[in-house]
Amino acid sequence: MSQDPINKITGLGRKTQETLNLHKIMTIGELAQLRPGQIPVSINNLGTLISRAKNYIKLREESLPPPTFMTITSQGAHVVNDSKLTDNELKKPETLLKALIETHSWMEQLVVIPDPVDPKILRKGVVYELSVEPSNRVALLCEWCTEDGTDDLCSMTYSPLLLIHFNPILPILTVQIDPEDWSKMSNGNVLQNVVWETNAMKR
Image (cartoon, rainbow, N blue to C red):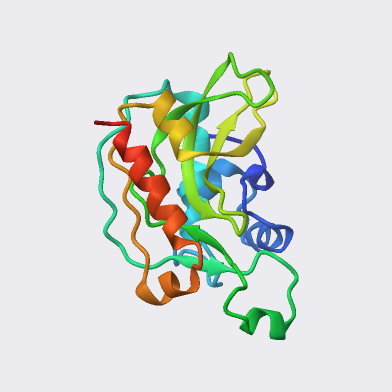
């Protein structure tokens, strides 16, 4: 069980850390064993944080197994404003929002990814949210642990095309978005094209 502090988990902020510490959740190992509802407070994305803690331990202790085929059928996408816009600007139809999507078929798949410092080195990592930037960039967040003795948790976004290049055994990429959220995405066609191009590489 990992004794590393929980603040190494991506997406776990200072207030969440303080709340968990108050309930004697200090380490990643303790967070990985936590069950939703076990503590008497509500924490946003607690299930995701627990999952990341488990994957952190898996990345450190296990070798990389072949990715498994899966299909995610839950609905909904979280569309957020990623810039400091005024209320009036947000009401304009041309204003683009950043979409963060967890309901895709590569969520929590184990992959190999090129190290951002030395691309000749491949790291074993885990895929998380898919994002569609206002700049029309489509990318997936990947996390991995350093292997230099520090066991730091690193994260970086990679394009779907790059991930399928290094991981051809990944399943077909599917994305499910609630119609209301889809209507907020002025650049939804960009996401459609990237998914099509990515899946075409598997044929």
